[in-house]
Length: 89
Image (cartoon, rainbow, N blue to C red; front, side):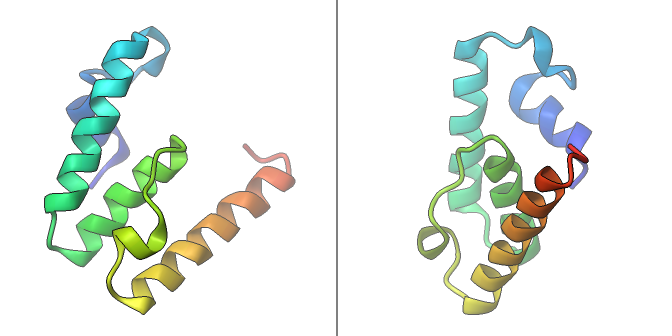
C-alpha cells in the first residue's frame, strides 16, 4: 500500500489542502470500514497506521487481535513521536 494510493482512494486526491471537512470525514469513515473488513495482517497494519496519522485510528486492542501486531503499532507510535520531537516533521 502506497501513501498516494491511499490518499487517492479515500479522499479522491493526493493533495489534502483542498479536501472539504465532509469529504475528509467520509474518507476516514470509509478507511475505518475497510480496516474492519481487512483480514490480511499487513494491510490491516497499513490502514491502521494511515488512520493513526490522521488521529482516527481505533484502539490497539480493537484493531489487532495479535499481540505482535499491537506491539508493532506501539513501536510505530513511538517512532512517530520521536521524529516529531526531533523537529523532523
